[in-house]
Image (tube, rainbow, N blue to C red; front, top):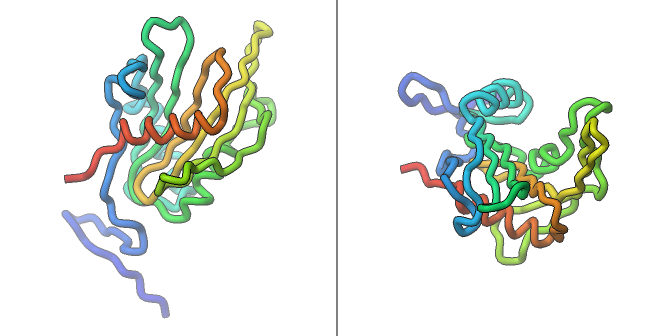
Length: 188
């Protein structure tokens, strides 16, 4: 017979096999050295829906969704879009891979151009994987852009660098870790 290790705090039961909750994701007004300003925060709507629908399949506990879009100051179109969650997560390698594999239906306007690969900088304690995606619109326009993902015991996110300028995947991985650093806050 297996014994479930659990802790009861404030009437809630927490499974001790999950990592300890040490950090959350916030939505700051700016990211990437203040160069990108918050354009839209959909955490209260899309983030809540995402947490409710994804959590059962994520091997997660106490998960909350964060969805934010940032735009380069003074640009018409140069966005960083963050879709993530914070809580307590197991199996972070498979979660990171899943964040990049999520495409929805086969009729999705987003297609994989370059499959995901690990591009974690040597100095990073957090693994990062990146891929190139292409998105088409009904007016015939298309955009190819990098998307990267991280997943640790408390946070996970996909960061899409939606810009018409070329962004190398290694640069996208480093920028993703900087976005993570800008959004990560310790639980006090």
